[in-house]
Length: 137
Image (cartoon, rainbow, N blue to C red; front, side):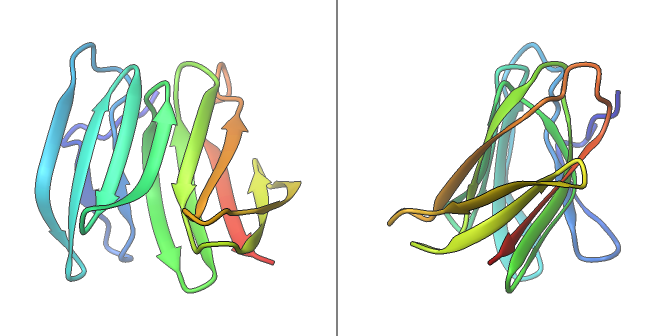
């Protein structure tokens, strides 16, 4: 399966890729500059966490590798890879309803709370790459 060898990288289309779910020990990259923001990633096989400008943006348990993560005004899209099914939490707007698509299929609408966090489960075991799209409803 694919991993992000350098732990955090900018893509040519403005997206980022991050995480390495195959690492046995924790690794991190701090103060990574991307599109005017400072990013920080911590990753290994048990957890992957991404922060932007000191604010929570993404977390998965167990760890995942994330490709082409792109935030837009009304959506977040990315492709996730992992060895085991994962619980993923994404930082979004407070108290907002989103429709969530996993593997191209809608899994329904979810509303964030005051903290703006939205959690979903993604079946990754033996699945390869799974696209995720979260769109403001």
